[in-house]
Amino acid sequence: MLVAYLPVFLPYFHLKNDVLTQNLPTRFVFGESLHAGFTPFWNPYLHFGNPQYGDMNNGFWNPIQWLIGATFGYNIHTITFEEMFYILIGGIGMYKVCKEFFNKDVALLTGLTYMCCGFMAGRLQYFCWITGAGFFPWVLLYFIRTNKNAIAKNFVAGAVSVFLFVSSTHPGLIIGAAYFFVFFIALIYFHRKGILKSLYQKHFWWINFCFLLLSCLLSVVVIFSNLEVLQYISRGAKVSMTETLMAPTSLQSYVSMLFPLPVHKSNFFHTDIAMRNMYIGIAHLLGIVYILKTTSLKKITAFGLPLLFFILLSAGSYFKMFAWHFLPYLGFVRLNGEFSYFVIIILLLCGSAGIQKLLDQNLNWSKKGLTFLLYLCIELSLLSIVLLIGTKNSILFSAINISSFKTGLKELINA
Image (cartoon, rainbow, N blue to C red; front, top):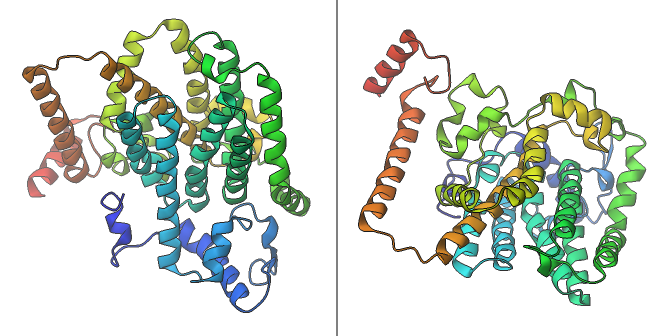
């Protein structure tokens, strides 16, 4: 992680945009209030006064925020290290999730990939998205463990994970997580005699109801705080149809799964630059290809439905318009690219399954095959670099014409 995010750790660069203009100022006031001996329920410097305890964008009830605010206080360095911490614990959580199904090597690869995936690297400015990405794998982990073994330890740890997730992240991710678990529970139930039979126990519905109830009880302070403030702010109602189509992760953005670096070079993507990166690594792409090749159509359809749902939801357009009208709470979310997080989660899990299945085959990799794979990786890397530094509007992502080709070639030669 240190290598992947080295520029952020250096004194020459720092986080920018929303995390610097929105999250850092409110956290600074939060920390200064604690040092002055005040409980920071109210911020008098924002909008003529702001009830911080019900601000769903800044994680007032997040224990880590209280710890940093009460000790070091907030500045550009502490908020940077805090964000990197969330990425780290998210990777550890993803590693543990994968260990529930796959071997240690596959789990380690997936954990590292998760920390460096396109959602993390491309959306660093959205601080409250990264906090959610840090805690969500732990919610998923204890949901899985509770359904495998419904003991008190797993219920309590799961409820604590839910509290940390709900208290720190953006409401859009909470809404997305609710839909994610609806799909997950349905998959477990319909595959209870097959691939997911280890997650289906005798009192399956009662176990999950208790998990939800305990999680809500532990998060009650966050729920009531938000409900109290919502009646006084505009976010208590659906956003307009125009706003609900903002900042999607367009379908073109999935080109970044192969070429993550050049995504900022063209208007081809028709969305904000922060919503485009969907990179999950070459290994997991190969795993997805292999699992598609070796799995029955019935299973592909079952696991592909939630993936398709989140792809279309994050892409905005007509499906988001339908969701705005007919699906609960989705009309409250403005930035559709937020839902691409669950696309990443599903792709990583499917890719991990493919890698595990590939390793279980004990294939005898020939020298010729390994050489081909090495050359393929090198060629993809070189092509990505050429697209990144060689053109301002890449001919790959824009209308191909002679003038653009000549311009791109000239810039490449002069680079």
